[in-house]
Length: 173
Image 1: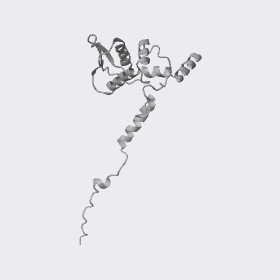
Image 2: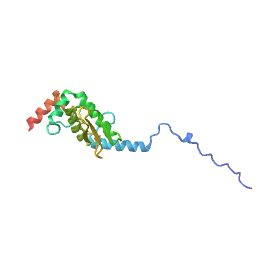
Image 3: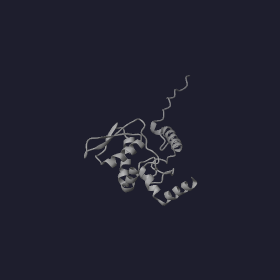
Image 4: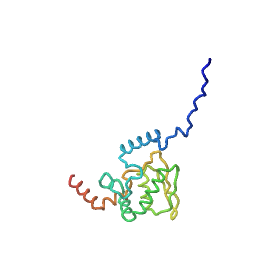
């Protein structure tokens, strides 16, 4: 006598195996890697980077890093400098090989050249006045500098905390 044949056990459906809100191991590994990189580079978690006008982490004079003209422009036109920095950051994060900025005067173009080089971008001015403008070119070494900007440096140095830090650095020297 043969034993009764049992039908094969049905495999559970994907819906039965699905666990809602289960952690994705790939996302967890990526999050751990990003956290390690943030710690190595002294960055805040995503979305928490300081704004452009925040105090830079390293306090020091801007002389030698920016021309007096760039510093004066940052003091008199902080919104414009902030807009240029945003355009440069967008270019660094994007995938365009070349970007043309709108026409601007000679002083503004010189500030754009300084900021572009700080971001690892190759700038070049084209056309004749009044249509003269700056084109940005990828170098393969683009990055967003930290502290972010000349504007942040100028604003910090003109704040009470910046003046106190500069006085402390001068006293220590």
